[in-house]
Length: 134
Image (cartoon, rainbow, N blue to C red):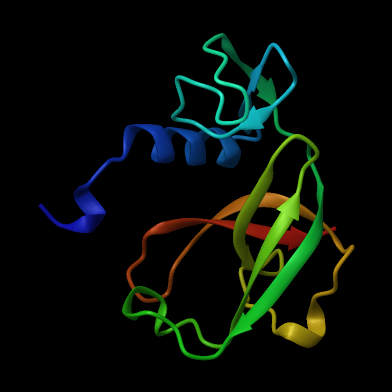
């Protein structure tokens, strides 16, 4: 079995939902957000978690331009990885334009509004979370 044949039920199903426009996060009764798969809230230990819709857009909290990448992303460089605040949750992914082209550091700014999407790595063809400027 190759990496491309492997299905991570939690992550791949979550990426499917994002790709279909039905992205979600898990929320406990105390309002803490986390990403699947989870059975317990990492903030308070609550076990009653429900799916809540992921906002359509978030704000770049921080980012970095990657010039030397790990082998699974070596054909992507340079690229920008950002942490994006979606309210109850923060997500990490690559920043790309709507056509899938990698953006570089000068194209990204803290506070920039982006939308979650799903792309593929050029190196391995695996699906990854990406953020597209709005």
